[in-house]
Length: 85
Length: 542
Image (tube, rainbow over all chains, first blue to last red; front, side, top):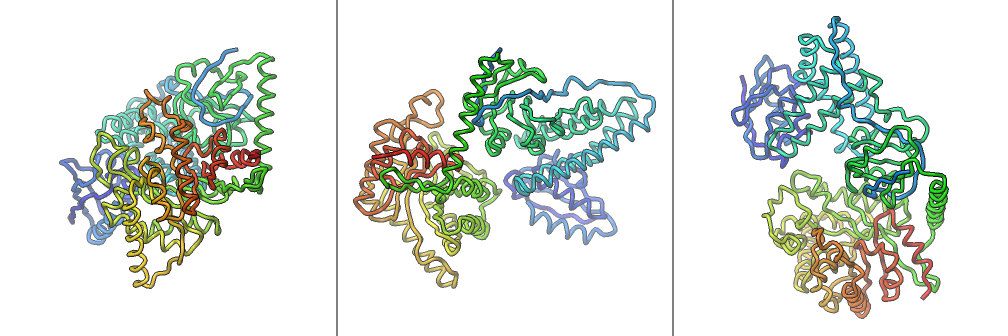
């Protein structure tokens, strides 16, 4: 399993648009991906689950990537987070 | 005949049959089913149809409101496809052996409640999106619950409790004579759309909305905010006349297009448009504005989740200047604070924000923000006739400081070998009594004045614009305000500079003659008022 942490900079947190983009990005990855924040965990490929976390600005999220292509997927997600929120 | 009253949201009169878009909330029946597989197939077919419909709504919206505002329909598609959501509907059908409509409705309510209970206000608002997709699927499953908006027949007046974003975008303006809604305000989504399309609208009918029944004849008086149900012949006749007069007036206004605002004795006034977004330029040009008298740059800051970059600002300014093709474009620098807040500025909560940390006060305090905006503006100056103006000025020193910052920006750009126009006008907003009293001195420092009557009225009369209790005291025609305006124009004239007015009372045709008489050179108003104002100027004979 590969893991990285990311501090959300977007003023509205993971609102509908970035959450939607994240789910799209995660769905395009072969690995299993989860997001952990404030003691809650969600499947990053599920929009309702991700939005349900209620991630806010300055929240530290942890993204866990497990699977055959975890190295590449982890790098892809890391770049994606930096660009989008 | 019955008369009900709401809020006037878009002017004009419409007479026609009513299409009542009813709420489906209490019309979804629960049925027990035996054939689970065929119910799941029905559900799947509805899902695909909903996605297809949303895709075409998305593409349609993309053209009309841009990528950022259309993204919500992509989210709707993802919500329908979400395995947790869709899986929950399937499970309900399989385990409870109920019809698809009921399973969708129960699941939709459950998911929307989860959002409704969240702490974050933004996320709570997403509950409406879940209900939107839920209803979409139900209406596909049960055609008898279709709200008629998808296929309006003939021309009708559309009545709805409230119009959801997806509903407003898909409505065909050719079939809709007028909107009336139970909820909503002047600034709600449906109201803005009605004004853009130029069709009458009355919103916020509240309890009296219940008086409406499907198919009944109504008169919608958008200007008065009234709806007349089953009018008798006499009233109908009267309104037909009013409608004809209104339409004739609109036609007359169209004839004004292409003409200049010149009084009978030959004084020409520049009639410009106020805009808040680059996409508003279209409205300004359609209404034949002589230029842009006020381009509020706030949208760049309010639409963004962080400080807009120099490049983003440059592109927005460049677009407007290019589209206006050599006509003057006056861009006002950042005017945030008071009633306009953005979260990332982290402005402290103030007891009296109208007199607080706002506009030029922020810019001169947080130089880096101001310099970024000025650099973007100067770079854009190459693409048209730019003028820059500064809000909330209260002293000569502020203007001198601004000018020295601009000089510094010019030197930096020159060093970096970045082009900017050699000359562009610099002006200030006159909206505080201090700036009026100093206008003789300020006139020596700038190329023009633009009077912001909303704030000038508020500060001159000591009447808070936001305080509804004293709303009747907020009077831009108050003699004290008019004296302020006259003093400014006179001091400007004496120093050889021109003065314009960009506040709301610039559009007040009762005041047009006064403005022309004292020597105002330019009036800048909302695009839809440009032609009316040109007509008013053409009727003046001093």
